[in-house]
Every structure is written in C-alpha cells, then in structure tokens.
Image (cartoon, rainbow, N blue to C red; front, side):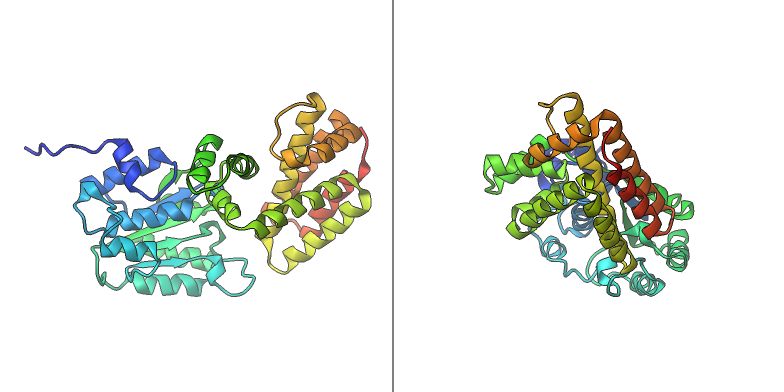
Length: 348
C-alpha cells in the first residue's frame, strides 16, 4: 500500500512559481502527482493575470527531474531551463512572435509547432507547446491545430491561452480541458508587490489600477515609464470623454491604430474608457465612493457632474457597444465614431 504523504495545497502552491490561482495550481499539481495528464489544456481569463506564467510553471512541473509529488522543484536543470525559456522540449507561439502588427496567428506558425511536436522529447518525458493569443488563430491555423488535438502524440501536452473563451472555435474548445482564471484579490497583489520591495503606497495604487492583474502590476512596478505612460493615457481618455473635439480626434487615432493591426491596443483603450465611465457612474451616486482611478478623482468628479446619471450611463453603454461591435468585425471607423459622437453629446 502506498502510504506516501499527500502534499497539502499550501505546500503545492509554495513550490509553484505562481502568485495566486490556488485552485488551478492544486488541480494541476494533483494531475502531475497521479499521472492524469490531459493532452490539451485551455487557460482562459483576462490578460495580465499570470496565464503565461502558469503555463510555464506547468511545463516545469511536467519536465522537472524530482519525484512527482515534489514538482516543480525549481532547482533542477529542467526547471531552470524552462524558467529561462530555453528548454528544447518547450515551444511557444504568440502574436508577438509572428509578423509585425500581426492580427492573427498564422498557419505557418501552427505548422512549425506541429513539426516540433512530431519529434520525440529531447531531454524530458514530454513535449510542451504553449499557444498564446489562442483566440487569434486564423481559420486555417485552427484547422491545422485541430488535427494535432484530435490525434496528439502520446508525449505531447498543448497549453492554449485565451482571453475570450467564446471567441475560440467550439471544435478547439471541446478538445481541451478548460481551466478558468480570474484576477487576484487586491490584497494579494499588494502583498506580492511589497514582498518585491514596492512601497505600500505604490503597491496599493498598482493593485487598484490593475484590478488584480498580477502580471500587469509587476510589469508596471518595474517600469516607471510604463506607469507614466498609463497615467498620460488615463488623462487622454478622460479628455476624450469630456470634450467633443477630443472625442472625435481620439476615435480617429484609434481607428488608424486598428487599421494598422494594433487591435489589442485599441481594445485596451476602450476598456480603459469603460473603467473611467464606471468610476464616474459611482461618483454620480456617491462623491466619496472608492474608485479604480483614484489619481483622476477630480477630473472624474467633474465628468460625473457634467453628465449626470443618465449621460454617464449612456457613455458607458456606448463604449461597451463599441467593444462588442469590434468583436463581431463591424468596421472600426464606424464603431468608434458612433461611440465618440455619443461621448461628445454631453449633458444629461
């Protein structure tokens, strides 16, 4: 009889180089321990919450040289090479690795990935493929990937990472084990930042601004220029929500970015506008309400007073509609101009 002690969830979490996501980490650790490995996983959740970090941690656990219940050890040669992104049995594809300003993952990228999976592992027991931006698979790329998911090599594990689960083809989703990931509690993000030397005040601010997206918080904590850029972007979007000429100019700039293939940047800007409208909506009902963008409270209070409850809700609806229109491929210039015209109406 196997009387080996089963590690606790805390012990498993402490070994994995992942902040939060305890439930998913525990599930994957048990799969490693008992050898119940699926051939394909789909990590679904908002960008910036550590999905890719988790994927590499799982790759570490799969390839670690320690006994199953002690993986990933974080110290062996395999763990070190996965952490440095140089392990020969781990392959990753993403939009950033494709052609400049790519909108979709191409069939050529998937073909290269399939070719690597066709080879037996060089050093470990598994070949691990990580596909970032999986909802951006082109039609041909999705069809090519489907062939691998339907008949995977016995040593292959494919990890897909997607923000919008519903944007994934059902044929792909149905062949993956789906694991949903959510933003972390702000207190956990604050704690993680402070443990890395961030001052308490800055940690609170970053946790609030990033809304529990730990990867984004860590990036901003180490990049003053990025944080300054974000503050300027907040001011630019507030101006667009408040001033008719600024609104139209902002929409035209976003439309041009979209035309150049920078879809993610346009969607991020619209999501920021959604956050700011929501903050303003809170301030309409309670001037002292806690808001996400505390640093912009004065400007948002002014916007809330000008728009009133009806106007603020109207602006929020228009921005959400623009996001929805872009998702179903409505012409970007039209979708953005409609939103900007609504913002420019002003008043309640």
